[in-house]
Length: 290
Ligand code: SF4
Image 1 (cartoon, helix red, strand yellow):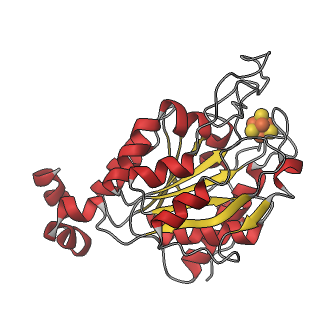
Image 2 (tube, helix red, strand yellow):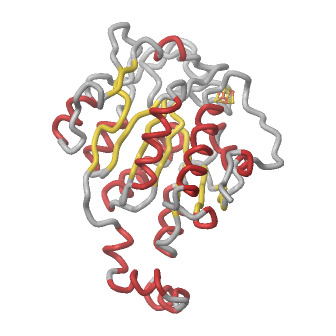
Image 3 (cartoon, helix red, strand yellow):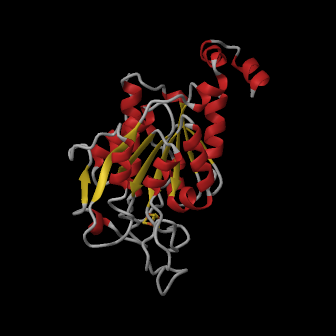
């Protein structure tokens, strides 16, 4: 029997604000999980999702798969542990921009450097929504929020550029209003063998409504002829938009970069990984080597 999106519903009552970009992300990832299970690429019982703290974190309440609610900025650490402990699992972390690009940034950089075989979906709304509107690492300079009523003095961070520089083997950007392209990117990220990051431009309808800003500015990298195997070209594309709110911004969506290289669990476990995958002796292997 095929898996339906409805079968991924949980008992939890959704508390996101009406109009929140998180709805599109939830809808997209549920369809992606259902597709991956139905086409035999992933087993439902092997999917593990994690979240940090923030509005995005309710994803683990709303999707009926194995899940782990972590701490603020700490999604990558347990995700790495889960993947290394059982490489058969499909590990997908959800984190906010304050979560992943602020407090948890060092974890993210090292996961990229190590090529940990996990996927990170970043709900980048460029504001702390849950705590009612403070600026984050990707808020534009001049952002007037609760903690910066006269405007943020800082230039925003460019996470695409940072992830490319950190050695990430899959780097992409998506926009929830473009559901099908977002699903395609999510699917490619999950199936990628190695560290995958998808920076999702998720409008926060209540504290930083960016729908109208993004809509006319986004374009598809692949349709523009970008070659995702070219790291230099990816870096050049990444620098075309520095998360500013400049009027002439053009914002690339899709896969910036993809490379094949050994994943961390493969390098760490080597031959023992094959044993772990094929044998009920997994517990013994882990006791000896982890
Ligand atoms: Fe979404 Fe913003 Fe509301 Fe949080 S505060 S649920 S991010 S619209």
